[in-house]
Image 1 (cartoon, rainbow, N blue to C red):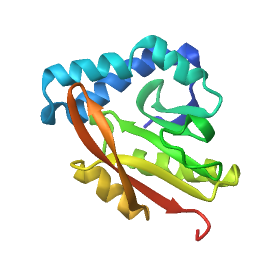
Image 2 (image 1 turned 135 degrees about the vertical axis):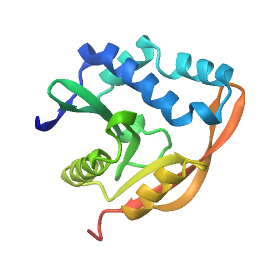
Image 3 (image 1 turned 180 degrees about the horizontal axis):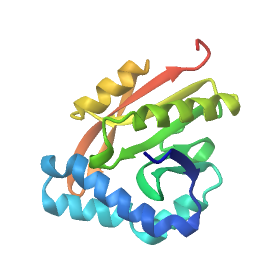
Length: 175
């Protein structure tokens, strides 16, 4: 079996990032949302100009996990002003961990979480945090196993549907 590798994305990866973003988001949330709201969200969140801007943002990092040149999923991290909530300079946000459906339950999410924690520690961050949809039970369980605890919530708008993301945090000073 081919080795699994991780590589940081550049703006040259924008088309592949868009494809995987749409695929994984629809697979994860499509059944629980109307097709109209899903289409509106995908057009807004994953259009090429927006993704290109995100890839060029110096305080954001994107990574693909790959095997034999095939992208299996991706990770997006934010620090500083790129974070989706003002959390301060001592935090790192895990904004997205998306694994393509065919490659889930193979340890790739754990690999991404380990990478995120290593990056946060190397950058002298004290905490790592994320938002997760209140109805995404598998993801909530995954994050709880990693030691994340809910500390707040914020709105997440999907088309015309206002939903709730739980905000979870993990201290890195105890590891």
